[in-house]
Image (cartoon, rainbow, N blue to C red; front, side, top):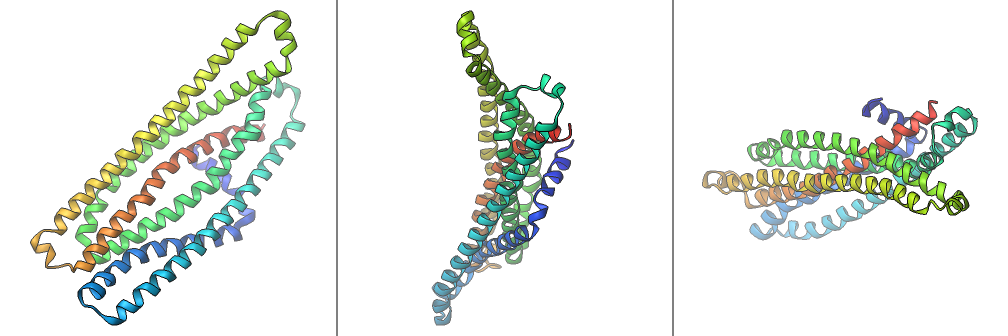
Length: 318
């Protein structure tokens, strides 16, 4: 099953709560609009307040800022609470389906499945799936809308400068794709290693008398250490990939920003753009960095969730 197919199946668990989901998306749109609004406010703030000294603008700016942050706060609450409510319902339903499936599965299934792996799926993997269906959606939609809105504002202010920023997008997209593939592969290995850790732990706890009777403590310690080390190594691979991906993507973005600032300060360009427009453009550029950073980090959660969902759906389809 491909990542797209898995994610589509995950979204079927969100479908019963479509109304709350739609409300959350509308709130995300409003939140993204306030981000663009903050960048846009820089233009009248500079031109109307500090340069032209327009009395109406001076009175309007503080009230507008308060209004933007009030709307922003309400939109953020509705989004977070709505998606959190959906997440807990998805977890409840998935766990219920898994438990019902485990009850009726034949004994042959348990012959090739360890209790630790099944418990790990029921308790740990389901939480990862919830992150894939809700937390990832929150970042993916809200931050994508914010970036699109800020880019649209930048194009409105100066198309040529915005084009320079857009030239960095293919490089970022390619790098993100490669990172996503690696995250998913490592996540699958981590899910398996967590199951092994849980399985061996439960074996020792349940059979502690036998271990002591046969004096196999050192053997069991070495056995546990092996799977524990495997889990640690895979976690470090995930950590290293995550740690290197963010600075590289940000470096590509900052390179584009630096070129923009250089071009914008050329004498012929300064004649075409007002101080307020330039400040607003630069503000929008730097505001893009935060949602872009979150989008690069969401791959970790998303790929963990998809890897976890693979095992859960395999159990449900037995």
